[in-house]
Image (cartoon, rainbow, N blue to C red):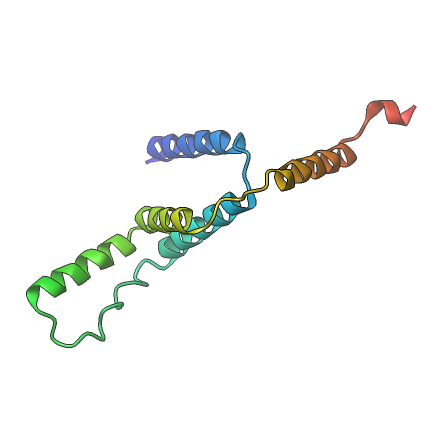
Length: 123
């Protein structure tokens, strides 16, 4: 139990470290936030999609199987996150202006300089 938990926690930390080096655009941040929202929401309320097709009257066997497979896919947190991210990545337009990102990076760097104490400033 404990070793397995530690193993998965170290995998998560490694993944977060890799993600920390990515230069995110506003589009990327939106896609990541939306995908994580669906994934965490599905994780916290696992039966949210179980009653999705209850309003369909008398489905045949093929349609019932399709409904069950859709429910299984939507009830799996990493699958719904991946589907949301994939769909948004295909639908949302790429940012054409890199100038906004350069300005935003300069603002972040300036904010970090303000927050970091400068030892020479104390003299």
